[in-house]
Length: 436
Image (cartoon, rainbow, N blue to C red; front, side):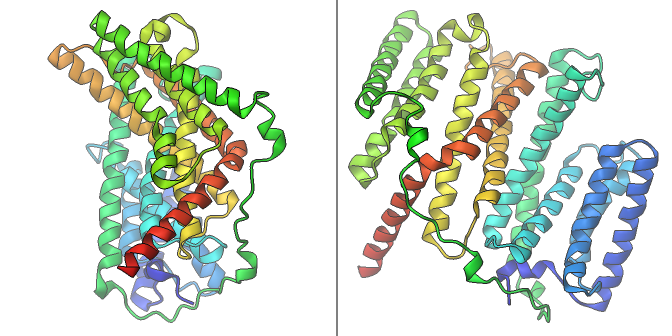
C-alpha cells in the first residue's frame, strides 16, 4: 500500500543499498569515535540516526531497503566533518540540515508504521518546526545543566550578552537550515524522475485502529476550576478590554509608542473571538475568550514598567502567551485533521506536535527580540522588545515549554469543540464554492 509521496524516501535498488550502507557504516564509526572522545550528545545523535536509517529495512525484513543515499549524505557529512575538524564548516547550518533530514525520516516512518496519517507537505512543515524546536530545546537543556549542576556547556565565562548573541545566531542558523531543508525536500517530492517504480509494500492501516474524533463539551471538573459563572467570565473580559483602551490613551499622553502599540495589538486580539462569532458563526466558550484576553492583557500591562518592577512577570506572560500559541496550533491542525482524510494526528502525537510547535514559535520570538535590539542600537530607537542576556532568553523558552505542556495535557479538552465548528465551516464554504 502506497504512503503517498513519502514513499519516495525508500528505495530497493542494488546501487542505492550499497551506497547507503557505506554511509551507514561511516555513521556507526562516527558514533563510536564520539562516544570514546566523550562527546556523548553527538554520539547519541549519531546512534539515533543509525537506528532511524535501519528501521525500515528491519521492519520489512529486507536490509536492501534503505533511504536514498543522497539524503543520507545530508545526515552524514556534517557529523563526519565534526569529528575531523570542529571548524570544517563556517556555520552550523549544515548540522541543522542534518537534523532536519533525520526529522523527515522520522516523520515518514511515523506515517508508514503507526496510525498517523500525513502528506509530504505536512511532513515538510513538521521538519521545519522540529528543526527550530530541537535547537531551542538543545540550548535549554545545556543551560539547565549549567545552572543546576555546574557544567559549562554554554555558561563558559563569557558575558551574558556575548553568550546570548552566540545562541541567537545558532537559532538563526537553525531557521535558515529549516527553510533550506524544506526547499530541498519540496523539490525532491515534486521531482517526477525521482518517483521510480517501487516494489515496496507498506503495511496497511486498519481503519478500526484509527478512532474518529468525538465532539464533546469540556469536562465538568475542568470547567469548575475557574469557579466563576460564564457571565462573570464575560464581564472580566470586558473589563480588561476597557483597561487596554485606557492604556492606549495613557501611552499617548506619556508619548510612549511602546505602550500604545502593545495595547492596540492586544485590544485587537481580544476582539478575534467576536469576529469569529459574528462573521463565521463560531462561538467560543467564555473561558476560552477570557484565557486569550488575560494573556494579551498581562503582556500589554507589563509595558507599564511591570516587566522591570514585578518579579516573575515576564515568566507569567510567557507561559500564558505560549499556552495561547499552543491552543492556536492545536486548533489549526485538529481542524485540518477533522476536515480531510489525508491527515490524522492521534492524541499522543498531537501532544508532541504542540510542544514542538510552541518551542519553534518561542525560538522565532527570541530571534525577533534579538534583531529588534540590534536595530534599536543601530538606529538609536526606543526598544519595543528587549533581551537581557542568556538567562533571560532561556527562562523565556523554559516557560514557553511549561505553557505548551499545560495546554497539551489539559487544555485540549476546551479546544475540541471549536475545531469541529471550524471544520464544519470550512466544509460548508467548500460546498458553496463547488455549487457556483
